[in-house]
Length: 240
Image 1 (cartoon, rainbow, N blue to C red):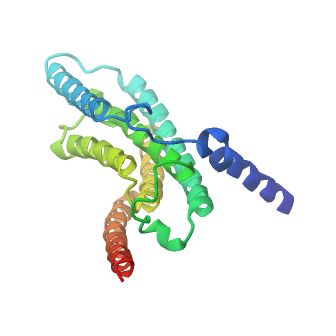
Image 2: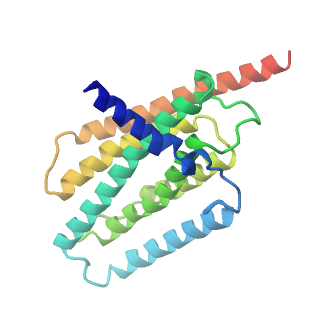
């Protein structure tokens, strides 16, 4: 069993950290796919326009697809997001263990010396692109045969998270590894719940999903406070 676990760990590290595509990754503004404000805002405007059009159009037309087809589409969607979130969690976790020079790096990157390249930023890039895939959440909400009204908060959240993910990469934002791992971990739990629902199973742990989201919110503020403390301590230490 020990050799099997070691082989699995070695393979995971190779494919999720040491693969040349990952180790040589670099976010280059206007060169990397999606790495430009124009791409970002064009995508968001297209998303908002499409959702608005469908939302109003479906008020006057029969709901499509059929309930059976919708459940199939929803199941596939939830499997994809859950699997991708799991890969991002494992990939980013192994990457920051490999890339960080010191534990404080998780909370505060050294000023002006952390370019957006390497394994951690590769997974941040995957995370950024995954937020465009999650636009389909809104599409599924709109075409759901038994749909509820589309909330402003839902659309606002999906639009804002894409902008936030872009800024993470654009500015080599501190806390990026922790934020990615915690957010993707919550998504594993949340989309697993949605997956079971789409398969006709109603789990009893819906409140657990909500509680974990609240815990993530609190954790983010605590991590931010630590990050600010490290930032100013390093600034004051550099001025001595």
